[in-house]
Image 1 (cartoon, rainbow, N blue to C red):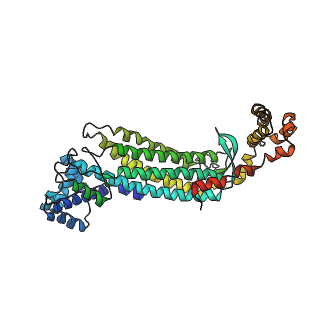
Image 2 (tube, rainbow, N blue to C red):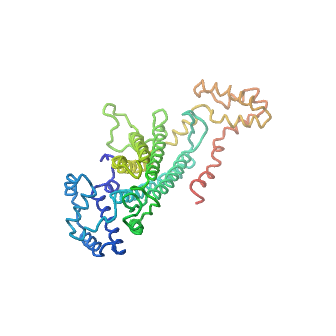
Image 3 (cartoon, one colour):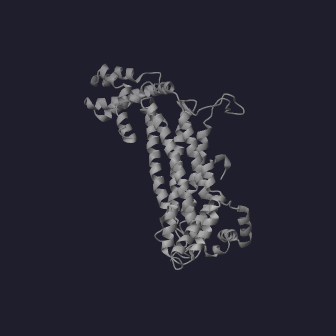
Length: 438
């Protein structure tokens, strides 16, 4: 976790004290149910909860000091709690194994992290939607292979992003449900020394589902899916960030990141206004995606469990969620304050002498009885003249002067095919599909 790319709420979720508090809740809820079942005295859970009600601070250094001797984090925690609570604490952890605590805690943390990320996506979607409607009919050039293709609107670019991040949200909700499971099943998952009803109780109290079958651990395919989903979201962040970066290039300059008063773009060149935020997002996306691979490699553990996944998850749990949380927040700010230049968009759209209307003429020729092959040849030979003139020539005028084209289409027919509004006739249809009838 890098403080520079962290936000407080998500970072706090992964602090040692937060983890130990979840561990305590797991142990106390389990002891509570064991008391109801008559396995331990009911007074044991009461003693735990009475101590907890005093809202004690978790002495992380003291627990760390015990772990330095025991070389076991869960035992260190249980020892420290026993020192605080007294004799009744001996009934904690009855029939449980360390992974029951560790895995259930991780499920709680990932579920809570997902809730923060879902809220982040909601905020991003709201901003994208606002910008989409703001520029619903703002003409700009659509590009394929980076080359002018046909006209679109900037609102459609935003609508595309909205649909993509809506899918991201749907995937994350599903991934949250998949990873939010509780396992309190004992040393190898057989419930030999603990009643399954304890697991059900803890799961209910912590807002988790029960794990249908576990070994000593919750199956790691669940976690692999979760972190893969975070990687996909990161890729969507990068896609939109790269779009902004391209649009901010000097030769394009159709949109750019907000440049605040006093901001500096370069230590050497005072004129520079660089897309630093979206470049940063590209880098952060690479990091989040990189955490998906070790999560997938964690799936194949030895038999009922080995510990090879543990060190990995101590990294990727905090780092992936904290980084993605920061990235979503940063992207929301970029889109919210994005400077959009409709005049430059129109200037660029008109730059190549009307080439962007070539398909309409091609189709009109075929409908007028010319073969598709000849239609393509007639339009292309004129389009190449415009291309080679760097847009100084007019495709419309060249087509009017072309005998083969003029034999099939009148001058008015040709002019009609250069109507920009034609390309936007279905914008409302697309917006209804993306945003609904409202």
